[in-house]
Structure formats: C-alpha cells, structure tokens
Length: 245
Ligand code: OAD
Ligand code: ZN
Image (tube, rainbow, N blue to C red; front, side, top):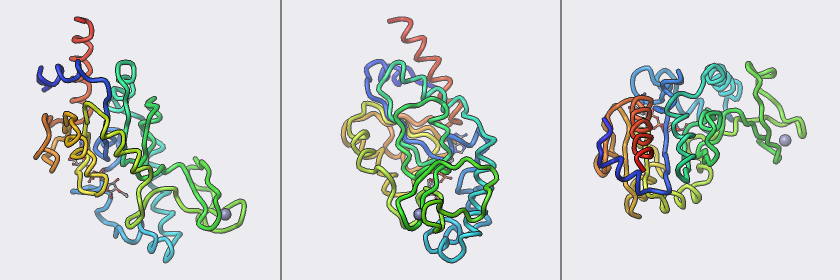
C-alpha cells in the first residue's frame, strides 16, 4: 500500500503538514458530511450551519449542535490521529484540520490549526466572551452569555463566514516538504487550495482517501484506503526505515 518511493520522500523530509477532513474521524464514529449517510443528508445546511439559520431559529441550531456534541463526546481518536501525533517525534508537523471535533489535540498533536473552529468552544453573539463548554447535554438551550446575557453560539465556522487562521495555514503549506491530504472531499474553498498551493511551492502531495477526489489530479501519491489503514502501514514502514539509519 505504501510505495518505497514514498518512504524515500519521508527520509528526506523535515516539515510535514497534514490537511485533514471529516474522513479521518469517520473511523472514530463521527459521520462525514457528503454522500449517503452523511451529516448534511436530512438537514438543510442553511438552517443549521449559517448565520441566517441561527438568527432565525437558534434553538434548532443548538439542538443540532447538542446532538453532534453527544456523538463527538463518545468518540476517541483513532490510529490515524495518533500516528500523526507520533510523527512529531521525527518531524516538524503541522495539522491543518477542517474538523471541529478536537480529536487531533486529544491524540496529542501540538501544532493544530482548526480552520472551522471547535465544537467545545462557545462565544457570545454580542460581546467578546469566549469559553470552553463541555456540558453534554447542554444545561441551557440555547445557552446565554454569563457576562451580558446575549445568546451564545458555537465557536465554529458556518457557511458564508471566513475560516480561522487561513493565513497561517497557507504559510505552513508553503513551507512543508510533504503535504498529506487525509479524508477530505476537497470541495470547500479556500481551504481546498492548500494542497495545490503546497505542491506549487515544491511539496510532495499525498492523498489518502478510499474515494477519488480532485486532489488525485495533481497528487504525487494517491493511497486509496481508509485513513487508519494507510497511516498505520506508513508508520510501520517509516519505523523500519528509521531503524536502518
Ligand atoms: P466530506 O464529507 O465532504 O468528505 C469526507 C471525505 O472522507 C470523503 O472524500 C470520503 O471519501 C472520505 N472518507 C470516508 N471515510 C474515510 C476513511 N475511513 N478514511 C479516509 N477518508 C475517508 O468532509 P470534508 O472534506 O471534511 O464545513 O468537508 C469539508 C467541510 O465541508 C467540513 O469541514 C464542513 C463541510 O460543510 C463546515 O461545516 C464549515
Ligand atoms: Zn456577551
């Protein structure tokens, strides 16, 4: 599954970026968005994941997020998350994730850019209040700001809103030797430009996904497998290679 030419690239590399999407958490039991059984199936995205939807019906939106929080609360990081954390023993690693589940941080990764925010953070819709809220289920629905009494919202990025830390993400993509794209359909821009941008700045691009995605058009290596399988095979190969050194 892991070609020797790929291992060779890892032997030369110093800076690794992993750009991840919902597929990396699928094997932790968190549904992806698109496709059959996806989270967007059965929901109108505009109703539950847009500023207008929240203004129209904050209780509906909070119920949706309360359900997602219950599901994510039960989930634990899988081998794909933990392998990425362990790579920090050998490389400078940055994780750029579109996921809001916090599983990369729980797996032990230290440099994590959460482009779409984090489902365990809340922020006020009026003042600057921002905090961690890990209540499962939520105590008040919808929750209110303890400082000014306005509505709190999940500190996640909704459709039509700018993503977090995009500049930083492009900076690390520009400076990496290897860009691993894992479990994303690569359809949501501008984040989906990151792997191409890395490639244009000299990185080797690896796409890990059981399905074909637009990244395969320019990736140096396409591994059509589940994230846990691909990353555990890769880690095993890398350890063999490091032992030879
Ligand atoms: P998608 O649901 O669009 O894509 C998930 C990808 O994961 C698909 O390409 C699957 O083939 C792949 N996949 C499924 N199981 C996998 C496994 N075990 N291992 C590896 N890959 C697997 O999710 P994203 O690309 O993350 O944004 O979607 C990007 C953004 O669109 C999300 O962050 C969300 C959504 O709308 C916001 O909510 C702002
Ligand atoms: Zn407030």
